[in-house]
Image 1 (cartoon, rainbow, N blue to C red):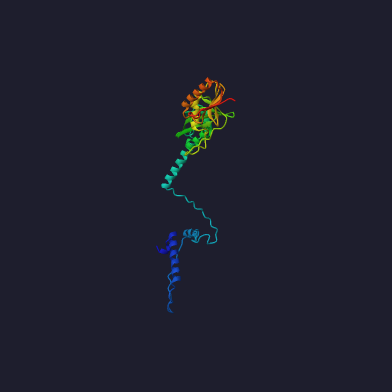
Image 2 (cartoon, rainbow, N blue to C red):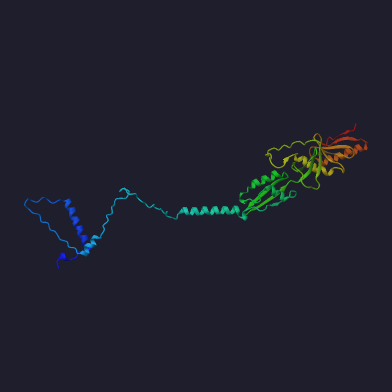
Length: 330
């Protein structure tokens, strides 16, 4: 059977067409040299015979040329799918820092809201005349986070509110524990001047009376006592203030037991401490309690001498035991 009578398959037809196209392209690029005249070119041709079935198959074939030119360059509207960038998760030191920060934030939140760190009550020790509930109300620390409290501020608030307290030891610990050790001033006399009564302690500091104190000496003042001079000590700006000298305060405490029954201790800016004797005269012992036992002996001797001589004194002064004097009623 000859080759022309063989039915060409579709693949073979495509291969033959490509070979012919390649030959035509090569011819255009490298045109053949002109042949001498008289020479006749011989062109070999092949006759392709197709059966009806194969020709029908080839006629139904569709070849679509796809251009490599972008749609936008060809004038065709381009449809682009937006690119989605997914970040790459990497674990490093920053993750450790983030975890530590998150843990600190959670811890701070828990400390602000946990009952273990919120003050529910205050323990107050050493108070005698001031109720603990009153002190706790002044503090205002209940329902506050304990780690935000300042012991110095708590101490300042107590001393400002209560002059009768001279020192406060504040201890704040976790969780939510506040302890106050109170040291109250102990009055030794009640100073009554122009109807205003103040309690005075041994150091000469005055504060308002509170409650009752047994054995407190009461003194009626005809004028203000000399202002005490504090040398080399920073003046106190809060709490109780110096009212009289410590020597004068101690003199009152020493003189009070010697006051006769029915007499009242008095203070005169000119003559000092003394009392109004029920027998009708005023006796003074000076501004200080120095040599008080000697002064009392001299006073008793002088009274005996006046009574023996039937003399009625108006004023007796033993401020200076070596030079006492008296003044008779006119």
